[in-house]
Length: 376
Image (cartoon, rainbow, N blue to C red):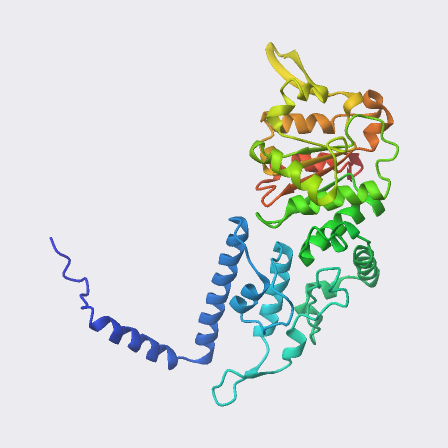
């Protein structure tokens, strides 16, 4: 039975209908047009955030053009998720400002447009330019403006420490040509471990952004700074990555940064359970409530100083074998492994390290922080 209420339109009528809709929209009030434009803008923002979750490459120039921001003279490069958030906030403030178009030309003059352009950093040659939020008349428009002077000073101090951190491994290495964000992220990792004494950090960077280069530069800098000078074990650094890229990672670390197999041992989770892996860990079978369970323990003599979990999303399932191996590393104490237990640090590198709260267990415990007086 056919539906007589269903409108029928021929292909020749559709362009006319589209024109009629456009003409009707043109006659709407400014409030209706603004609401529609705001809705489309938020849909664009949602699409961009999904692109990050999907691991797609997003460039600075492309993102600014998509968000309707003025062009910048800064060189095009990949951006991080944090920078996307800053650019979205920048675009929202930019959209809220009055715009005047002269003679319907492309060279429209934008009121206060200069304040919305990302300023060039004076450290452009050795660090990624910072994205700063434009100063507006009302502090409520800028969430960062609600911070106290002490917090702001502390943040500025931390940023200066990162910028001033020397990193010849990337900046003066003729074998590599890093992007600004790679230098910045590597400096942040080093600053957190060397100056702040962090026990664990997450390297959050999208697929194809060069995480191996950043980690290799970080490790090389740690050797230069004497971070491993009192290490007396077998391998100071244990680099755990996916099985298909173990050899490739080994070559990058050696050719680009001169890191030998004696300094960094590259392996994967499957190899940790093999004969070679027993150098680092051993398995024990215990009976809990009448059921057999396999537990893993790290050997004190082969305990590395730095453990890098590349593609750390493999640790999300807390009941998986790889997660239990990582959890066992967090279970070491001074009583079982001596003073070296207090010196072990970890890097969790991934484009999507966590999706739920339970997925953060390995990283959260590795930080050794205190929550409401209870140490993790």
